[in-house]
Length: 104
Image (tube, rainbow, N blue to C red; front, side, top):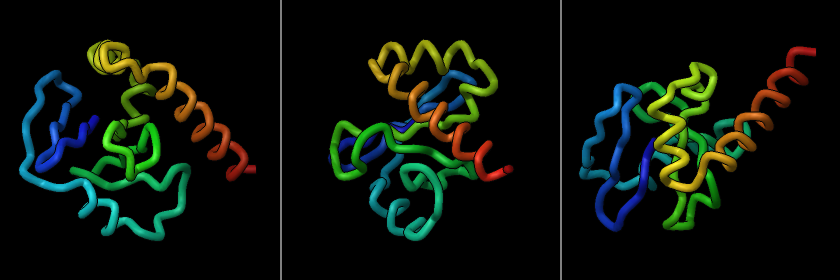
């Protein structure tokens, strides 16, 4: 998961640690323009991350839907702590529905 701050990002990893990155999320958004998919995900560290709200909103967090597939307890706890678990589930279900329709 990624949280945006004014001049940096906080990146949360699946193993439970987090780090501060001196980067701007807008650079990832620009790099991934034209990427087809639900909510226009961004590619960060080889993972597709999906925005929880409009990407221009400073409250936007980017989440890794694959962690929900893996039932990662730390990740689920983090999403609940940030108050975005229900939103994450909604995005996850929409993405799964889209992938099933694509397979038909």
